Image 1: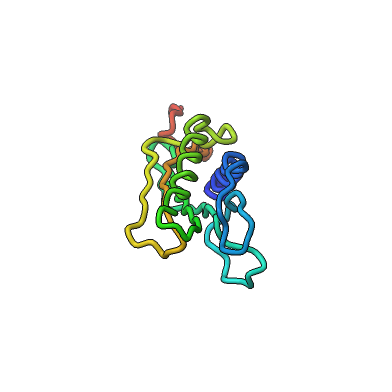
Image 2: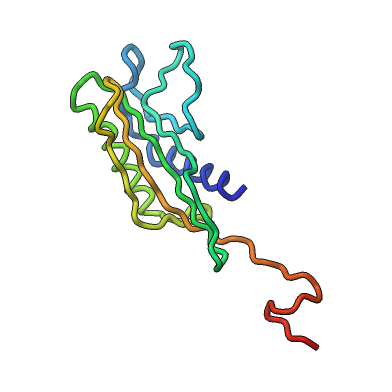
Length: 160
């Protein structure tokens, strides 16, 4: 549940950060701010609505260490549309907004803290006229403390 709530918080914050950024959609559709999508792009549907631009937020991997601190990697796939050959710059605009917005307030819902590095990569092979970029973020999450069973020795309790 922690990882689901973390991704939900990132999606909510991403919507706030990107709401005023208007960039091109697929040909024939009005320009708009990127859609924030949970997990994976939906199956191809009729062209009643454009998929582009978008930001997909999905958990990557994580672990909980001996100090009961959970670390989670969350990836964000940015997808933009442009028939111009500098269309990758729209993906970089989305990246810049997200990086600035998340670094200004790196703690979400008083529970999830973004750690550095904040990394990204622009794919070498772009599916023109679509442009894609991947952002990788690292998050620290305080995890529930262990409640020892009654009568168990060795958890800071002294033997009688």
